[in-house]
Amino acid sequence: MGIIKVAICDDDQYMCEKVHDFLKLFFSRQHITVLYYFFADGMYLLESDEIFDIVILDIEMKIMNGIAVKDKICMERLNSKIIFLTSHRDMAIESVGRNVYGFVPKDEMNRLEKHLNTIMHEYKSHQLINITGESIDIFNVAYIHSSGGYCYFYDRQGNEKVFRILLNKVEKILSPYKQFSRIHQSYIVNFDHVQKCSYGSVELKRKNGLLYLSVSRKYTNEVSQKYIHYRKDRCRNG
Image 1 (cartoon, rainbow, N blue to C red):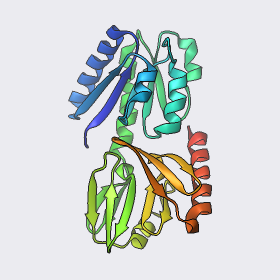
Image 2: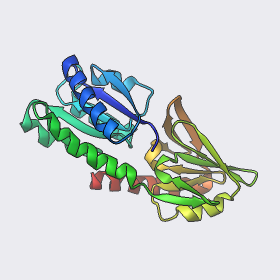
Image 3: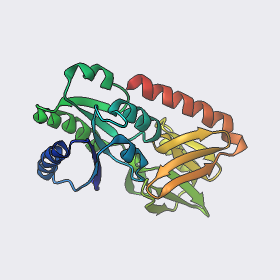
């Protein structure tokens, strides 16, 4: 497993440090390398160019509360897995939703471990596909570009893997996975990494900013319908 990026967002510095200490102990036992990012308010988190794997999010913050931040994350960063912190148990009902893995009362920090275990189980059970003899975790594939008989697989950080294989064959391999869609003669995208799908283009959020890929006229209607169904399924399952 690669490096995991975790955002801790709370306007209480003591609570940030307490969560950080808990997470360091948890991930050290799992032998997982983690990069931590700290935010005193949800607005600063949303302004970050980073894409976080896990977000530990206080529900009650002054400028922008955690519920509003969660809604924005769900729209723009579909892969971020959210765990809420709260001082009031009666706010837990508001914290449900897509990408939300649970809520933790601030005076019961040990309950954080249960939700972290659920998230890590998902990470460790990612689907693998075989491309010319190499196993690829489809979770990490943001998009695929074909050129000159080669396919270039890109993750959300912009890292590249090259395989000598036709895109048509890759499309068949990925056909069981509804999050993938052919958008162009030369491109396949993973909807999990798409921030916005509009007529004629898709917008992917990456570490160094946004990436726009053209949707060819041939695929426009199909891509739009698939993306709508995909988002509905995500909301239904969340």
